[in-house]
Length: 177
Image (cartoon, helix red, strand yellow):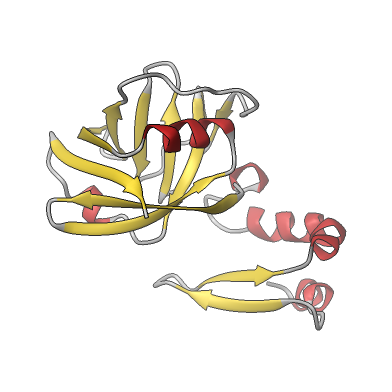
């Protein structure tokens, strides 16, 4: 962050924390601060490799746990109709396979609502998505770029190493935490 951008964001009501192996930073702000500084935050995110303003999703407090073999990882679902529709189907046990060495996909038992979500998205590594044309749940571990039909519905709390190294036809159980 540039010195001027940091000065614009620094207020007594804001608090900042770094986390993860990439040193990502989260800034907690009031709704007034967010409204007043949205363009600064968006510009900063857009300057990071592989990120732009459309790559930001609001993740609410809907925690889920994802079990692969005997390993549990956690994630959070976004506040949109598609994510809520997935949450209503939980718990689910699905079989995932690799697609193009950038994502793992599994067909859901029924299609999800896409009411109110954008026509497409450019998901980040670590995002959970829904690909509406095929009805697949998707775990992104590589950069796929923008595609029509992608709805971003959540985000993993951990790195994608475990997901990335799974062979085809691995079983995953997804449930509310």
